[in-house]
Image 1 (cartoon, rainbow, N blue to C red):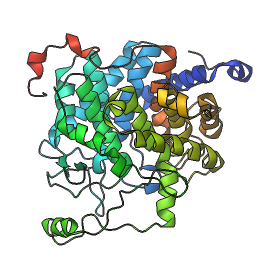
Image 2 (image 1 turned 120 degrees about the vertical axis):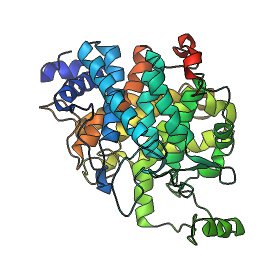
Image 3 (image 1 turned 60 degrees about the vertical axis):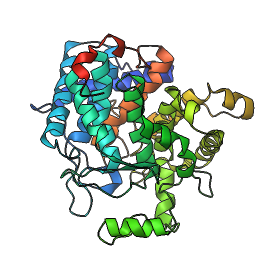
Length: 407
């Protein structure tokens, strides 16, 4: 697929431009993949962590999953499987705990729930498409370890050492981890998931909005006798302390709003949100979409920001709108709808490098942002109609006898 000259690019549709950038990134990835299948790590954007290669490798594996649908080649297939083999090796190395996603004396090495969700994502998608038992075994090993807190209606991460960590109060991490459990469920890897069902039923308790109408970044839990009990369980620390709004909290809420909604859109596309969540969740989703459209376009061009230059806000909002505009609830109650193509255009205008055709402009972590073009794959899978995983698809031909350990 040729990038063409500037005039040609102007005539391309937003969807074609996305495909063009994705393929350009796939070609670039072939030149930087390490012999062990991994890709050079980023540093977790503005968080500036010392990352292991797990995250970027997982993103590139997903990128090749989508690139194979656009321009099938042996090179992309080989790169995809080498990346998955690396992820499996990392999981098997930490068989008693979570996959190591970073090295930081002041933070957990598993990167909470989100590090595990990202590691499992390509193993699920590619394992189902390719009927690969090893990938699915590793994915389920990652997803089955975090402990579910039935009183908080969410998961507690597991450290690399196997130590159970406190309840994860970061809402987007809970939602993305739920997405991966949902994919496993809809693919038939388990008959039912009581934890996921409970999470979705009580999602309205986690999905709260700030005064601007954007999702709160942290679950606001007040002090209670139950919290005191938990504090003794974890060595006297207050596990879920009361949160007071700060400027930093508002910055994170703006920066992660589209990422959180992208996870909810995955759940909606899998039909699980509609099946289990209450209608109040939808009202908050659409209120958030309006708030993001009002406040975030002006945040472009800041390399230090959590939105646009770290979380690809334009790509995420394009997928969110593409999914939720099909909702009957949206059509009946909300006449105003942002344009998905406009969000794509804003993202490419802000962060696309015109020379390399990679999405690594105006960012402090080009390795991360460049790899996150894979998030556009879900947009193209809906608009182009190429095969995407649905409930029951692909997995029905898999030899279930080889996967009893997964179920």
